Length: 230
Image 1: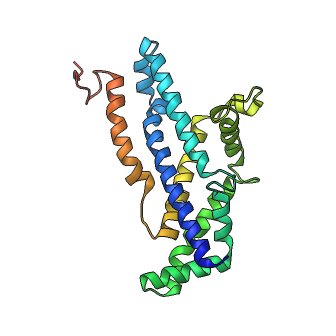
Image 2: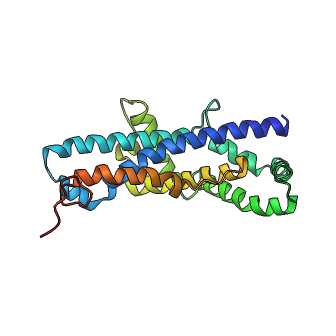
Image 3: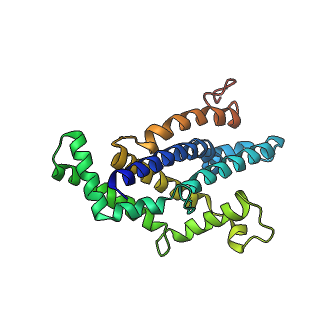
């Protein structure tokens, strides 16, 4: 297969990854306070509203995990992060990518290589982290098993791993690493600078602040019925 065709396929895959990570970010930033905001948990307490709160929390978490796992799908007809990393490991492909980017920008290949090489290495490193034998593979396996046996499908006899679920802190780290991979790929392949963790997530984080401020009650500044402390 020619480099041009390989690159075009990678561009399509990276754009699909961007769409999925922004879905994940949208759900993640709205879900995050429900997992880690002790003040919010304390306010909800054991009220009738807490039941609905838990349903919303679980739904947000479910959709976030499904979006993340679509990025890491291993189906050959789907987006595959492992296939993208494998292509970047190919020195011939990367050399051609550097040349194409340098020509498009009118810079030297040496300067372009110096700019792109650290990003290439970081993508490969993070993908390897969640691959078999990597430091994060156990986390990935827990989330993937949860997705396969509980979220996307309902297995009659789920494995012990699926029943155990995945801790929220592990999910948080997996989300952050996945967002970083997509950020780097957008820069490598599309020459786009987009800080997903701040610029992208910041919008949804700002919006989430207001809905959960209302849930925390009138003691929270920003609530429509806010009452300052005596």
